[in-house]
Length: 111
Image 1: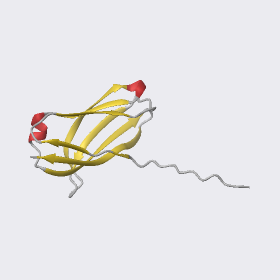
Image 2: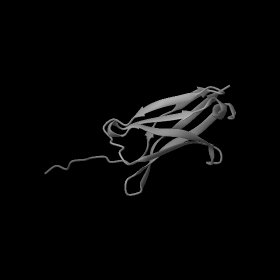
Image 3: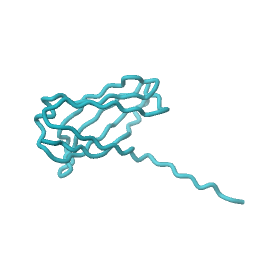
Image 4: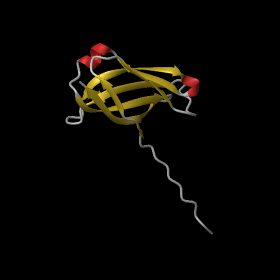
């Protein structure tokens, strides 16, 4: 009798971002096949040195039934950041208060 080997992970997906300082930034994210009805979504940029939040990012569930989310920063927000590399993460809270980091990666801020 053979055994079926399977892998299950709850590690966040990887997505790197980049933008130029003092420019508006926005990206659409599609969690294909994941219904986000009733979810709340937050995102933030994080210092790779201290792990502290450097900048909260605006988030919006644009199509809950199809799992689509928008993440953005204004030109004022990006202008306040020093050029360099940061971390970022997108967290969601599912109905029943189940919290998970869904995406993470690096953010490259260009002068």
